[in-house]
Every structure is written in structure tokens, then in C-alpha cells.
Image (cartoon, rainbow, N blue to C red):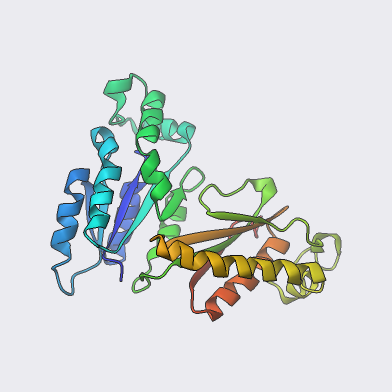
Length: 283
């Protein structure tokens, strides 16, 4: 089992909201914890039998440069941890600070909110790169973020195995910023051009049968499965707890949804903890 979850990320990107959501799920959450205390608190928590799962929301500001070092120290203790990094575009973070009237923790050093955000982004670059889960909240509201946390940390569903999220999207709506692998399905025959199929989505059997009626689809899916069979053990050996695989087509309604559904079923049959999301299917 995962001993604890560490929530890190950009100031204003939603760390505290993630902590509150985990509290609602029954977790014991320590918010705005100084980074140098993370290993000490985590070590104490390991001796608490039958305790609620623990989440540490790591503060940044002046401590931002220390977060990566302290997380490395925590991993050296042998604790099974999962790290979540909250991010958002600079323009979004600047806007949020303007709306909230709060001071950015690095404002005194930089003189402007935008410069403070960019400095913090540099300081946290290593933490972001090593995170198990990246959640970009640029386009998410509070309810969207809460749903994302529920998907990841529903009670009793954290484990030491790699968890895979399979998602579909439409390229015309933008590539998701918080995924590990992006696979393009736009070369597959498009049900959109079949009038009777156009109103349906890739969740419908008719679309799935149409997409899978072409030999190139079978070849593509086989290659994807072979890729994932190679990658999943490699990710697990490197300690990465969450892998997000995204399938994209033009609109995110037909081909990518059908392939994502098929791959998710295959992963589930292998015993892999799998979740599925369709970002653009209802657009």
C-alpha cells in the first residue's frame, strides 16, 4: 500500500483544494507543511497502525528550492509514496492572484506576480518532472479538480502497483498537458463521415464495430498493447505510481474514444488498476 501522498506544486494551482478533497475522502491531511518537515512527519506516520491514509501538502515560497531534496530524503526512508504536482499556466496563476488579492510568496523577491510565478516554476522544475501525477488546473474549476482527485484516490483504491488512466481527447480542443503518452488516432477511418454514425460516440457499439472493422485498427491496437506491456513494468521499477495514456482524434468523440475503451478493457483484463476519461466526447 501507499504510505502517504505528497501534494506539491505551484502556488495558486490548487494544492489546498486537493488537500480538502482528500480530507472528505477520509484522509488525514497536513496542509502547508514546510518541506524540511516532510521526512520527519512521514517517518512518524509509518508507526501508526490502522491510521487514516496520510497526505502532506507541501508549502513553497522560500522553501521551493528545498522540496526536491526533501522528497529524495523521504524516498530514501523506503516509504511508499505517491507525489502529485499541481500546475497551471502563468497567465492563469497571475489572474487567480489578482482575483484573490493574496500575495504570492515570492513577490517580495521578484517585484511582480508574473516574475514570482516564473521563478517558482524554475525552482519546482525538478519536482514537477519527478511527480507521479501531474494535474494541470488551467482549465479546471473546483468541481473538475475535485472529480479528478476522486478518480485518483477513491477510498481503498491506492496500491503499490502502477495505476493507468486512459483518456481520449480531440486535437482541435488541444492536447492534454498532464499526460505521459499521446497516441494519435487520426489515421484511422473516421465514422464522422458516415451519416448514420455521426451522432453516436465511441462508447457506442456501432462506432466500435466500425472502427475495428479495418485491419489497420487491429494492427494499431496490437502495437499499443505491446508498447504498454513493455512500459508498465519499466514504470513500476522506476517507482512511477501513475501512468496516463491519451488517445487523440480530430474531435475526441469517435475514434479516440473507441480505442481508449478497448485498451482500458484490455488493461483491466490484465489486472491493471485502470481508470478511463473522455475529455471531449460530449463537445
